[in-house]
Every structure is written in C-alpha cells, then in structure tokens.
Amino acid sequence: MQAELLTALGQSLVTGNLTDAELLARTAPHPLVQILPDANVVKVGGQSFIDRGRAAVFPLIDEIVANLGRHKMIIGTGAGTRARHAYSVGIDLGMPTGVLSVLGTFVSMQNARMLHYLLAKHGIPFIEPVQFPQLPLYLEERGACIFFGMPPYTFWQQNPAVGRIPPHRTDTGCYLVSEVFGTKSMIFVKDEDGLYTADPKKDKGAKFIPRITLGELKELDLDDVVVERAVLELMEHAENRRSIRIINGLVPGNLTRALEGEDVGTLITAD
Image 1 (cartoon, one colour):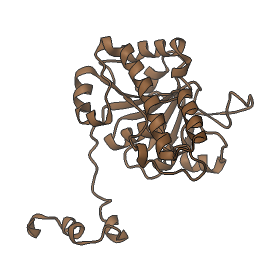
Image 2 (cartoon, rainbow, N blue to C red; image 1 turned 90 degrees about the vertical axis):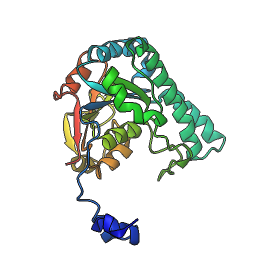
Image 3 (cartoon, rainbow, N blue to C red; image 1 turned 60 degrees about the horizontal axis):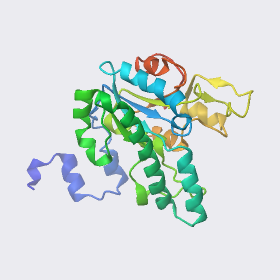
C-alpha cells in the first residue's frame, strides 16, 4: 500500500509497535459510529426469570409482542439453573473454565430457542453469532430478534481470578452486544426490582437502590450484586454503553416503561 494513501495515524500503525502506549493513545480520539442507535438490548434472566416457566414467561412474551413496531429489541437469554448443574458436574469431572463455558453456552441457547418458538408466529427470528451481520435487516423487517446471551468465547474464555466458573456469562454477553452496536439502552429483566444492598430473597432488611454510579457501588463493596461483576468492570472502560437498567419483569408494564425511557428499576451508570 502506498504510504501517501494512509493517514498519519495509519502510517504509525503500519510501521509502529502495537504495544506502544503512546501510539495506542492516539487511536482513542477518533469518534465511534453507533451502529444500531435505535435498538434496545433486552436480557431475559435464566434462573431469575425463564426458569419460572409459563407464569413468568407468557406475560413477558405478550409485552414484547405489544412493543413490536414501537421499539426495536435485541433479546438475549440467560442460562439459569440447568447451566449451574452442568457446571457442577463439569467441575466434578475436572473440566477447565473454557469447557464449562461451552456447557453454559448450550443451555443459554436452549432458552433462546424456547423464546424463539413462543415468538415464531410473529416472525421473530433466532440468530447465532455467525448471523449477526443480518441483525440490522431482522430489526428493520421484524422489529426484534433473539440470541443466546453467552459470549461465543467457548474454549477461549479467560480463567476467573477465583475458582473455575466462567467469569463472562450471559449478562456480559448481552452487555457487550449493546456496547459494540451502540444501542439505545441495555435492559436486564430479572425477578427483583433492581439492585439492593443485599439479596432481598435472603435479607428482609435489604434496601432498594434506584440509582447509583460505579464509583458509589465500589464504595459500598456489596457481597451480592444483581448483575455479573464482569459487566461492571467492562462498563468502566465502555465508550457507548455507559449505563444499564435492571427491572422486575414480573411486574406488568415494567419492560414497556423501560423501553420508553422511564425511570423504573435501578439505573447503574459509569459516570
């Protein structure tokens, strides 16, 4: 490639060392394109929601259908209790973190396929990572699509700092889709109103937190948080997705309110 066709940064990248901190810093100021700024990533919890079965899932399906044509939705699924069972067996058999990630991926995929079948009559497709280039078309034509939330690291999943459970699971996978595509919002659908000072299922004295920053959350040093800690770590360095919202999907209308931008559930911001 002729050098005169490259920008000054381009020439530096071609001839420089990609471990050079000064050179890497020069790549930061360039503005990002928000690829899907009108879309919303909606993560439906596995253990917290889908595992509850018909009583929880059917009303949410109705609410998703009611919002078709009004809000574009990229719907991701959690893995839930079946993944935890698979993890326990895999750990007992001596499987490494990367293999456990594969097991969790297939459970998340099962949940995505079940939601897909429930929404199939409305033309909502199920997509795998290889189909993400067609995602804009699906959203434009049908208004929504479904994917499994587990990031496709499989064997390439990094080892956690403690233990062997994959640190980047379905909350993280859905969050990364929102960050990379620059979507309008990232909504986590759980079975709790949002973030509490402790697990409200175990501690009746737990206090609800409607809004908090990452800095404030770090100071609290909570033993239990409502989303994977990896999401909070990634949000520190995020460029598009600087906030997430956690809502109680068991409350009718909460998803609609969140899609409308109303202050429902808990809002966690990076700033």
